[in-house]
Length: 253
Image (cartoon, rainbow, N blue to C red; front, side, top):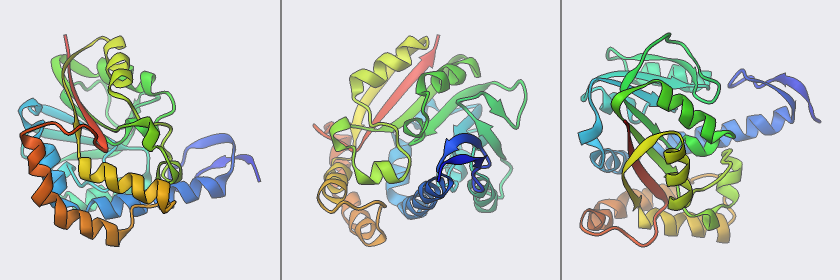
């Protein structure tokens, strides 16, 4: 039944939403976050692609369970935001080091901090969850210092959009052309884009399109974690023709 109310997980008041469906999205999202938090090698490998652009005050948009938050602390002072209370609590527990973690909605521009700007903004696998992604990008631009860097990781290939994307609340998957245009239109200068994780793209297509899975299942993730250290280093030499993600690095001029 559709009604007006607050999702008990993220506390956002939304009109005419199926609240039980909202909870299903959150449960699937939490399951996926829990699974991906176990991909330690992959998380570090992904981070290695943008370490040179991390410094000073770093904002992590959408910290999830804190899989990257603790690692980011090695490169600067970290502020981490999320709209999900459970994720905020989990990240605080996982990252006891001195970091600033709290509520933040990059789409509406409401954060637990006030009048703070950043040298680097990291937004990994979050933009696709935001209905008005252009507004979110504009808000990121406004709180980034001049010459500061934006690091985006988003799901690629709209044709891969399937049951998993729907169940975890994705509005879209991006083409490189679409992502570059949206970021550029907000005033950013594009420094670098590339596809990442051809192994994940194959697995995502099979799980979502053939098996019609709705979450990233743990047993499949174990297979990925075993193969990734053997195969993904090839991408350090040559960019794959397909990938589950697009990495984009931009600068505020």
